[in-house]
Amino acid sequence: IKHPMDLFTINLKLENNQYKNLKEFEKDIRLMFRNCYTYNDVKSKEYCSGEKLESIFNEKWNE
Image 1 (cartoon, one colour):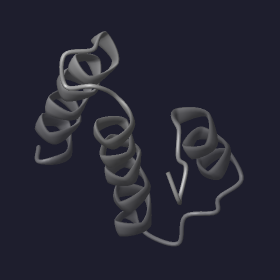
Image 2 (cartoon, helix red, strand yellow):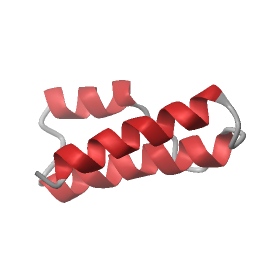
Image 3 (tube, one colour):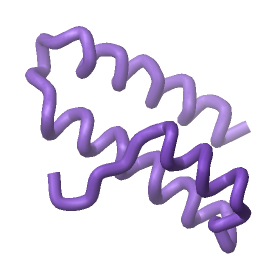
């Protein structure tokens, strides 16, 4: 994984106002999901959890 990203880091960036706009926030979220799918086997719990979380994120993001 060349560019690691996780929820803890995203939360820190939010708390420290490091995102200049929503697009930067979304970019980190999408990177986290891509990394999840790259690193984990498609049949793993982590991969499946990533898919579920991404689905929820997409629903909320598009509201």
